[in-house]
Amino acid sequence: MSKVVLITGASSGIGKAIAGYLHQHNFVVYGTSRNPDNVKDVPFNMVALDVLDVQSIQKAVSTIVSKEGRLDVLINNAGKGITGPIEDTPTHEMKSNFDTNFFGPIEVMKAVLPQMRIQRAGKIINVTSIAGYMGLPFRGVYSASKGALELITEAMSMEVKSFGVSIVNVAPGDFATNIAAGRYHTPVFEDSAYKEKYAENLALMDAHVDEGMNPEVMAKAVLKIINSNNPNIHYKVGGFMEKFSIILKRILPDKVYEKLLMNHYKL
Image (cartoon, helix red, strand yellow):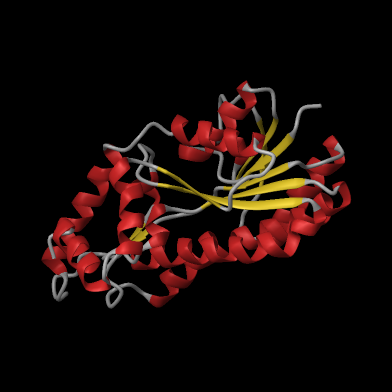
């Protein structure tokens, strides 16, 4: 029997790549978008789902379960970026980012868990970020939202294990997607104390995305996680230095690691 997969944020980027790849490997895939009618030429099913709207989440899950009779895998991929000096970034934009990157995925997990408990089986994969393992300058809110999702994954993994459900996260590094276009960018204010350094780092961030890895690398990693009978809790997918930076943070003194980051970001 083909496994039924729900993947949020499947209209573009990493989500679309994962959904297409799993479809090729004979999974029954339901991708989501706030406006699925605008998503053309995809081989998998699309349903409407807005992670900020609990009713739309429940409706999407109910529709899939009613049609397929089960739901085996949730891939919590929907999210958005945000950049800016913390001092200059509007607080409501910070809260909006947490609503999408943190509270939204939690609501989707809450919606699928009752069905997975009935089945006594299920797997939830939260897409976080390598940025969630460290506070990055001018990306602090994004780092914090993804880091928070990493910790929620750890907690929920223990809470649901007895029901036959696994919850893991996979943290990508920089991938060649359109994430930069969808970010909220705090403006480079003329009177900002961070004007020059922030402007330089905006260009650096966009260059990292443009030079990023093929999203299919993430899709292959997700397939391996789905097929694992005893998955780990944390996975990292990215370049050598991106993954090595997490190891360095564990072993280096705080000030030494901070100096390395500041040199990298020319601060």
